[in-house]
Every structure is written in structure tokens, then in C-alpha cells.
Image (tube, rainbow, N blue to C red; front, side, top):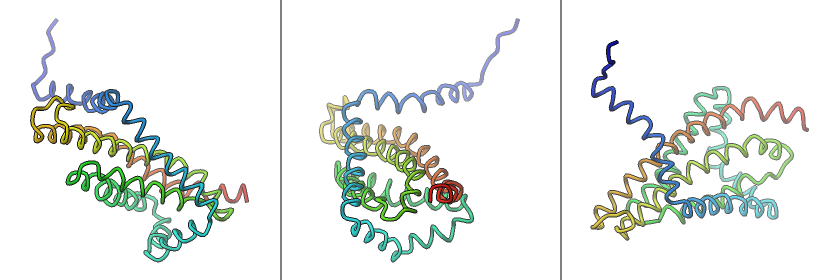
Length: 224
């Protein structure tokens, strides 16, 4: 019987794949309290904003009017016939405007800045999705899962920027000696957490796009 041998590149590939899956969960497990606190903040503020939108429907209508004015609603409507293209647009917005501009890039310059910026976004998102019509209530049924998926992606990024800020300001928390090494260590953890966040954003964009086309209308015919 001959022993099967592998090239170094093949062995490296086999070792790398499990680590890409395992390492983000190790980071989350080592920082459970921060993960739970950030999750509670994100989901909690959306819930609070949702209740405020229900209690004061004029706020929710104002947010909807803003989307009409800036062209967001018209863009979504124009792409409903092409769910794949709509998914690409949704993914681009979630990556660019929210993940990069709201969470990650500000935190690279000012430690923890992405946390309060996202907190405001969470509250306003809750206000925005608060339904003011029967059709909006129906649309909320499938859209609730979109909110859960996408929020979970942002929570992973928020945990990453929290760890980045903590390790850069207090290097010993990341077993580093200098602030520079602490910053690099935090940046590495952010990168690991960005991998599952990216996967969740892809799933969320696809689900949101296809649910708008194939779930909302049938549900409205059934429930209204």
C-alpha cells in the first residue's frame, strides 16, 4: 500500500479552510459579554424605534417620504422585475453605506465611533420599518427575517470595531506591548469577523430581494 502525499499548497489549503470557519467563533466565544451587549443594543434599539414609529406614525411616514425623495423607493421598485440585480444593489448599499461608512471606516480613525453611529441607525431603522398601513404590516412578515440576518452581520462588525478600539487603546487586552501592535491585533480580529458578516450580508441581500418579489404579493392576496 502506498502512502498518499500532498503538495504543501494543498496542505495549506486544507488547514486554511477550517481556520476560516473556526477563528471567528473563537473570537466571539472569547468575548461573549461584548457580543451579547452589542447584540442587545442593536436589536433593542431597533425594537425601541419600532415602538416609537407605531406610537408616532408621522415619524415613520416622514422616513418613508425621505426614501421617496432621495430616490431609494423608486430604485427598489424599478428593480423588482430583476431580483438578482436588486440583490446586488442591496448588497452594495449594505456593504458601502452601512458596513464601511457607518461602522468600519469611522472606527479606524476614532476608536469605537462606529458603535454610536450604528446605534442611531438602528433606532431610525426601527422607526422606518414601523408599519402604518395594512400592506406594510404584511410586508413586515418576510422582512423581519431580513432585519435579523442583516443585523447579525452588523453585530459581528461592531464586535470587531469594539475589539479594535479596545486593543489599540489598551494593548494588553490583546496581549500586545505597544499601541501599534494592539491596533494591528484588533484589525486582524476585525478582519476575521468580517468574513461571516460578508456571508450573512450576501444571504440577507438575496433573501430580501426574492422575498419582495415572491412573498410580499402572495401574502397580501392571502391576508388582505
